[in-house]
Amino acid sequence: MLRKNRLFTPGPTPLLPAAQTAMAAFTAHHRTADFKALFQRVLADMKEFVGTNSDVLVLACSGTGVMEAAVSNLTSPGDSVLVLTAGKFGERWTGLAKAFGCPPDVLSVPYGETFSLDDIRSRLTPATRAVFVQATESSTGARHDIEGIAKIVRAHSHETLLVVDAITGLGTTHLDVDGWGIDVIIGGSQKALMMPPGLAYCAVSERAWNRMEKATSPRYYFDLRKERKSAAKGETAYTPATSLFAAMGAALEFVRGMGSGNLSKGREILVDNAELCAEMTRAGAKALGLKLYASAPAAALTAITSPDGTDSGKIVKEFRETFDAVVANGQGEMKGQLFRIAHIGYYDYLDTIGILGALEHVLARVTDRNVEYGAAVRAAQQIYARTMSEKRQLVGA
Ligand SMILES: *Cc1c(COP(=O)(O)O)cnc(C)c1O
Image (cartoon, rainbow, N blue to C red):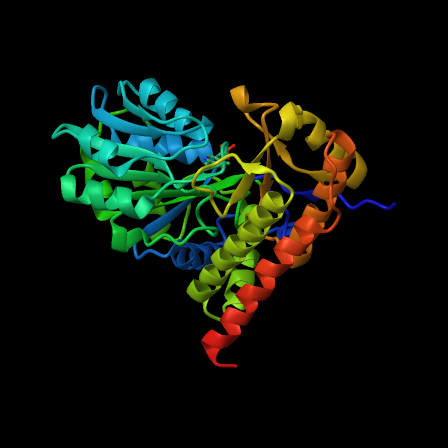
């Protein structure tokens, strides 16, 4: 059969066509009125996309660049910091803290699990200057309780900053950034914004801006204070990735359209969409007798344990070769043990049903299981039908 190439990876994610054409058409120089108008509109819209009143900065780098900026701008060598890690992205915080001379206290839980709030509370000390965590751990598919963690950190001390890598959390998970008291929240363009890699962004609280004035870790390109000053004048400190700003503008318009002209509402709908795709996928996987890898599964992606000792690489390969669908293998030590199907950004009902239908064929092909065709698809349809009928009842239609 004809095959369409489709990404089901937790970044990069499928591209919004309008973002691609906006990129291709954009030619303005960055020190012009045209770019300035686009830049200012994007920064204002990004506050609504993140759901914050704080300034949002957008930088030319991948997500890790802004993770590094959070560490270099907020810490001084020797600072006590707490890193919460449950996977490969949590481990990245550990590496960054060490690179900037802050030997971290690391609270780690096994891959696939999430933290106990009591454990977090007991690890905070009067000296803890910052806590670093993921909203969703993309390597294991786990969802962390950011609201609960924020409550603990805020009750602990005004001097303890909470930094959240929500690179796959934003646009897939409900996060009340200002209400919960998150100090820095980080996102990336190649996730829920449905555009190519190359931009990363963060929202920064007043508490965190104040910390930056005293922090002494070295920084230059990623000096957020400099970027904020330029942004206030409608400029970037250095040459921005102009065409990616055009793509971002188009993606934000699409989300605004989802909310019938209200961008915040569009964001909520995008999050509900990811939650529903994820719930359908979990139901489908369970109907096939598969186990989820994460105890508290995220909406961003579903990590599924490879069955019966099958190397998950075989599953990933079969998806690609037969259907040209790209799903992700496990990372690092998890390679071969699980596969990951993403729901971040530009996914709909048909994508979700399609990948589950393909999963049935893939399992029949690479495992010894007796696959009942339609079992995963049916379970997902039931979730969809129930959710839609609940929604109709809610609006009284
Ligand atoms: C994708 C991702 C990142 C960023 O990775 P980059 O390759 O630097 O863009 C960071 N954290 C999480 C949880 C991610 O999913």
